[in-house]
Image (cartoon, rainbow, N blue to C red; front, top):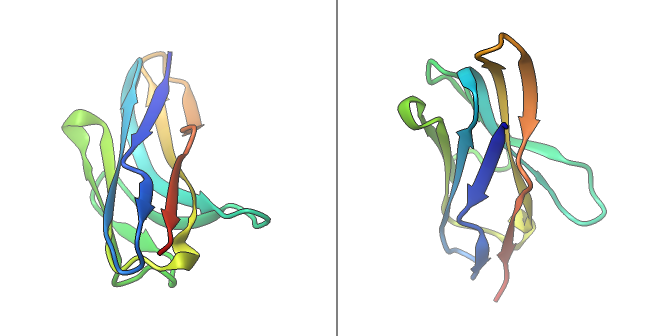
Length: 120
């Protein structure tokens, strides 16, 4: 059974830092792109950052220079280091992975989300 398990969310003051982690498990053959998306109350889910298996990254303009995405292919894990957090970064953060299983099935898989709240 495929799983994406996120961790690292929480409450932080403006200007603070958090590091999110997302570990994929199950009958995975390969993971192509992994990424983070977020959804604030009353808003649509939006891209935060993505990273390919080769390490190419893509960021939303709103987080460039403050967030860094990375991944450990051996552990099927993606990270999001967030610094200089702002109240507008408050959202439910979702991990995403586009992967292929050992049965050669492709999935665009989502985690359950981890809450990030930036408030004084």
